[in-house]
Image (cartoon, rainbow, N blue to C red; front, side):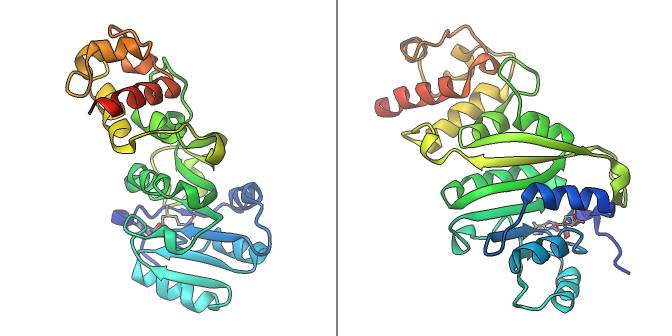
Length: 256
Ligand code: SAM
């Protein structure tokens, strides 16, 4: 018996219907470079290993890591007992296929960490709190559209696949979950001259959503720069498309 650890976001998937749906959505093939984040009690791991032959996994909980080592051979599972937030995914690439029923308390930082490795990735299938998936897939001008949306949509095509109810987990979480697929844009990715500046502009534009861009971005660019990029300084950040943020950041970059 494993007592679930709340600090590691341990809500284990226990419904075979949803296990099968997730594994089918990933559609592993022999030879795929699959990495599972947080395999836990191996609900997904068994199906992934059965279809891919071999996978890599990263698990922070040492008791669960010990169980995984007895349940799978090293030929089936290359296990890293590590914190996925600190993990250097570059050592596993290229063509990485990431799968994870992610701990909700670290989902945004983990997505940003993975986005920093987008060149190495083939795709990601992640289960997250339903509201987080709504933010990832949001359109401009909606309440869900924000920093997470713009930072991820600048690098990935994102789709919500299906919703998973709390009753599919043990213990049941308080919220609904959803599975999302993220596919890197690679060659279609907008060219961003200075990623750090882009991130700062996006963060500032959404830090206080009610502010106009003229005020929200006053520390990073002038109203003239906004106008030169074809953006109304009186507009709010939530009305700008991802391409508008890219155009603005690229116009400001050489001025700094
Ligand atoms: N994949 C399993 C499932 O679907 O039942 C477990 C999912 S549970 C929501 C999250 C898993 O991620 C747990 O096994 C937990 O120990 C692990 N975990 C939590 N934080 C982690 C981190 N920073 N790095 C790696 N694994 C982590």
